[in-house]
Length: 483
Image (cartoon, rainbow, N blue to C red):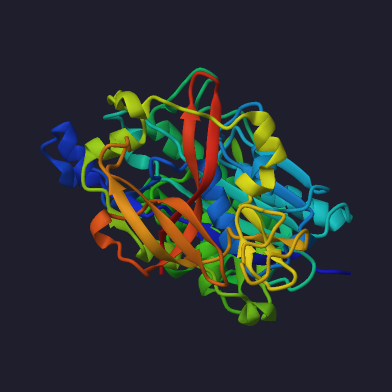
């Protein structure tokens, strides 16, 4: 019988972080030493759950054969659209085939593991051969509230299939309860939560223990059989206590990343799983559990293929690549909590017409241009005539994807007149490795850090948000290459 499991993984953590002491200082609290330690990851003003999921998926499928992916599941509680399939947008951005299965998983922080289990079932049934699962969240707590300190932003992705499996899925177990601790109604902007002791003792401690114990009984396993156990918890001390009560040694419990990233919602268990896979050795068993209206638990076993796995940024490299945001005011601006004056230029939005977006979806969302069959010159956007003056071939073009190519900054400028939530607005021309040139906005950088010729890569970001029409506009931007 063919083995089924994870064939690749990827992760994403935003470049910016905010120290929790910065939040406390803005609120005027006098004794920050008694409050939550560390920092949390902060999505840039042009990032959301969809863009972060794309970044994690790009890390996951880097070097993979995209034409073999026949399913994409996107898990989040903070989807840009309530009615427009976000997974479908993502599939277009990643330039996947049209005849694939796409689905959104939402409404619970366990939706990431729910999507993972559903993908495993699809592959096991034969209805799909390779399914990409991505989870991301960008949740918002009320200003000056506890959840504002808790929530962080991030994403993870795994590819499931039968060939080149680096970690087999050996079993799953789930429990489901309508246990209300965190919730957000349709017209709520911020998450709401019940009392902390209730969430900690009746929620995390009970349900994570129940689903893990149920998995162990179901497959006749013991805590000693695992190299790592992965589970989320927004209470640091309770996180350690849950593992201890279940019989796991401290070295078996995967780092919670809470003091470095925060609680990342649907992505949290999968981000921790990616962290465990980065350190795993062939033969290791990993147990990953989730929490949210019950929970899911999955047992994986690392194979010899792990030694041949492609290198990814995953969690380690993203954790190391960061910059402190510096001020609470900038964080509040990024999260649209302040009604700042954007000026006349900033309020003029010319959204892409939906009919044009459909016709040019590969050009706009997937950043596909063309390459001349005769001379090999790439160009963007797609043209019928080769731009190489020594060639000028007509109608001899093949599709060519620029989104996964790197390049060098040919020229750039900082614009202090154009509105930007993080001024100045920076844009410039990028010369792609292998040929091709186009102008992009630049982000995740300061003007002073840029130089002509510096290496850059592309990232999928939100270009604008047309509030009146309920439309999010997306395109690609250039950023300095993260380690």
